[in-house]
Length: 229
Ligand code: IYR
Image 1: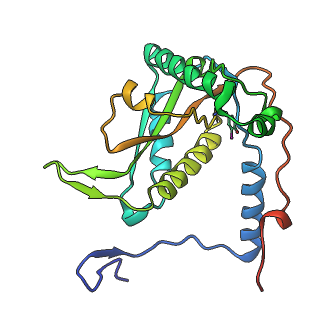
Image 2 (image 1 turned 30 degrees about the vertical axis):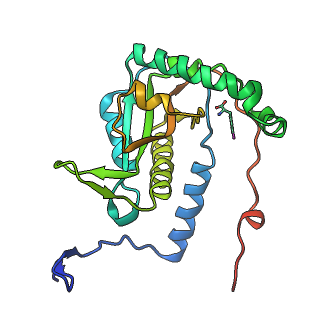
């Protein structure tokens, strides 16, 4: 069988090698993947134990398998393990978060997050061995300096972050999707180009011993799905 062919404009296509299962196995696999993903939790207390760079590389490569608008892969994952940079990020984040918790966030917002027991202190930004700062590339800059548009950037980078969280969980690590607001201090501290905008700050590591997380309940299937048969 021909594994390669060209589309009508001459662009290469390759045969998609699909892994197919019986209905019974499909059911079992969907169930067990759900059971396992349902164990993932956001963790805010980290152990000061480092992660090998090869592991981080694989997590990022997994994230980068996400679909993206026009396959532009409009993301940069900055991996911060340098203690000095982590301290700078903590200081800047806490400065913004202090203002948020003391005036910028509405009473109802503060009420909504009370069960999570967060506040403006962000010690995990120094304790977690690794901060993955995800930047979205609103456009690309070609080597000759010209700008090329990217598409569906928020959707694309959001999908990549979802896969990143799944990869982190699969590796036996934990993460926190932290969104200090505003986040432009990250561009300055990490010296990023103007086409890159901070999207999510994700501390990654091992949980501290005896970590407790909020007893959250996830919505039932009938609350989140609508079937049209
Ligand atoms: N960004 C702040 C506040 C915060 C907001 C939401 I929405 C949360 O789900 C949790 C926290 C912080 O990181 O503390």
